[in-house]
Image 1 (tube, helix red, strand yellow):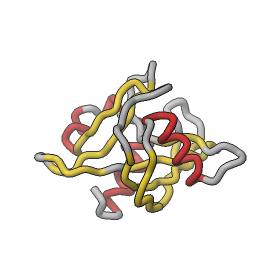
Image 2: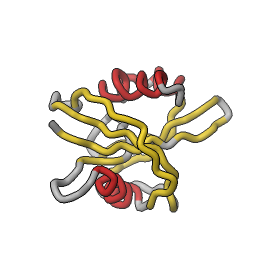
Image 3: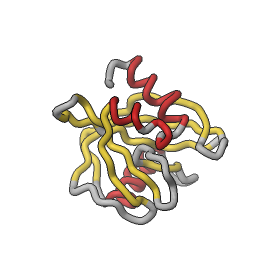
Length: 133
């Protein structure tokens, strides 16, 4: 099973709350910033390393939200550790990230073809249950 740290960043927008997503190069779907935990690091260290590598930012006010389990887009078992926090610095796509995008609930509903099953079937329902979304 793959263990991934995912950062959920919310912001207020004119049409309600939005969530931060990234789109990797060569992919047509959006995911949450973060990445796989390496053998020699904690899940929190993985989150910090991935945010620096992907977006060139640090993190502040990091809070653990919980975990969800599902599958990667290619069908591998995935355990996603969910965090929230405040990026420190300017968000800019780096390395494997092609695009940074903020999406609200209506935008996500219009673009379900560009969302992973993990996001649609596990993360968003978790956020609803926790009354965060």
